[in-house]
Amino acid sequence: MFKIGVISDTHIRHAISYARFLDVLDRKVFHDVDMILHAGDLVDQELLYAFKPRIIHAVRGNMDPAAVCFPSRKVLEVEGYKVGLIHGWGPPEDLGPRMAKEFDADELDCLVYGHSHMPDCCRYRGLLLFNPGSATSPRGGFSPSVGLLEFDDTGIRGTILTLEEESLG
Image (cartoon, rainbow, N blue to C red; front, side, top):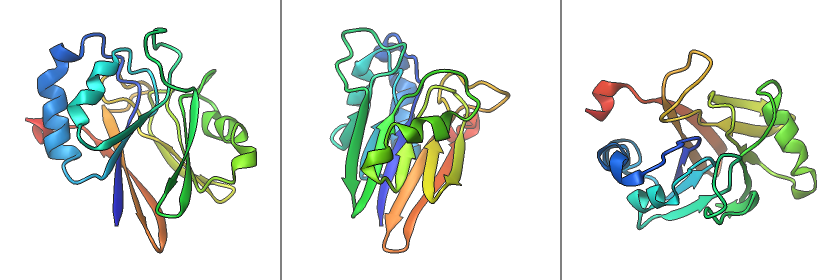
C-alpha cells in the first residue's frame, strides 16, 4: 500500500513560528506516508521542509507570493494511477467538478484540489475528487483537517483527518 499525506490552504506566513505544529503533524499524522501533496496557498514555502525527506509535490495557490515558484497544476503517476494536483479558484460551489474540467485531457483517477478550505472526498464521473480542507484556517463550520490517500491494486481511497487538539497534543 502506498500512502500520501495531503494538505492545503495552510496560509502560513512564517513557517518557523509553526515549527511545533508542523513537527507534531509530521510525527503523529503523516508519520507513515510515502509522499506529501500540498494543494496550494502555502504562503511560506519553507513549511515543506518540515516534511523532508519524503517526496513532496506542491502547486501554487492564489494567495502564494511570486517567490513561491510552483506550477499551477501537476499530473503525477502514483502506483499506476494518474493524480492531478491543483489549487482552484472561484466560489466553493461545484469547485471539484470545475477543477476536474482543467484535466479533461489527462484521464485522471484522482484530483486533489484546495482553495475552499472545506474538506471533500467524493466520486464524480468515476474520478475521486479530494480536498483535504485547511489544517490552519477552516471555513464553513469545518474543523482543521488534512487528508490521506491510500493506493493499492483495488483502487484509491481517500480519508479526511480532522485535527483535534488532543490528537496533536
